[in-house]
Length: 458
Image 1: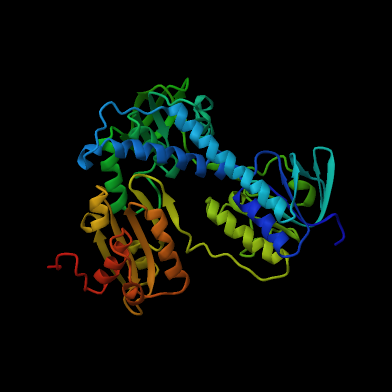
Image 2: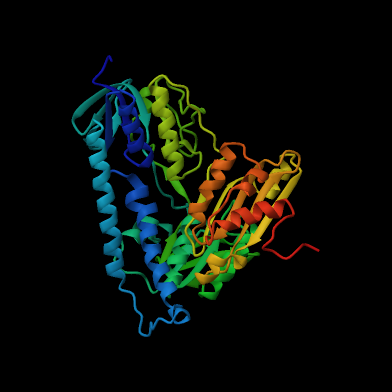
């Protein structure tokens, strides 16, 4: 070691904090530099607080069907400030847990904004930190498109910091963040309007699922305005948009912009080490997470790959291993995607359409959640599974699920893809009964033409 640390990790989000621990586990003297709370956006202003709020909304929404189970729920109300406090409590405990983990593994956490100052050095609010290798993990922040008045719109950060919900909301953007917020608000009885520039919501999700989700949200009063271009936000309470050549407007008590996230690569001194970003601010990396500068790696949202916490964590594991002299690479074609709507949505690998485009002769196995016993007794019968496989060798290529706890079940399919498993192997797995996971087995049997719990195909 020529400097104070073998490795310095700049940024303590899910990628950075896990990367720092792995570096220490591999025998590297490691510094983790973070100006805000450990856990980054995911833990403090993203995944965890959103899911805590959605959990409360799901329980509230589910309780309204209590009469079906013989429960008396007359006069049911929700105290949102108490739910917000619950969210904050869980976040606080998880942050404390991360701090304890870093200390236990021997990582030195350096508090403050880190700015690079030439090769192998950075300034952290008056302290000079030197290192042999650097892993950049600065993360991202909510983006606001260059539209007049957009500065008056709220972001996801604002929503998650609020102790009260607005009476109604216009959400600009029908991606994952926008749809999860729409689920939260609508489940709590708030009027929601979604304005999306694309012809459908949730890019990457198959129409069979988005169609069902839109129908469910419409029943809760959500209005969808698709294929519309926002032209102005008016004082944070109205949105003007163009659709089919006609200008229209919607008004509400608040406007929330969920139009993607921007990398936090500015003002951190990248120019002092000769590292450039692309025009959007992302840092290019290879499959080993190496940047164009020797001994400098980048992970997480700043790489412009897939902006998901579990991708950042996987990248962090690989970067740490490579800093320790190993040879680890990343693959992005087996990354599970999860959406915490009600019911949940998840997918991994190829869709039928993308598999055909890649030259596969495709077999699709499917099963309706309504025919699953566990889903039926849960009173959650809406959803489906589609299992995509190759006709020639039977290998599973991908899977899409809309069902209760789909985000947990998708891990099984990720394992199958990682191991190159086949439909036959998946069909032979004994799934416990009664569970929602049985829909996976049923879809595999359907792909073989041998599903015993579905009506025969005509």
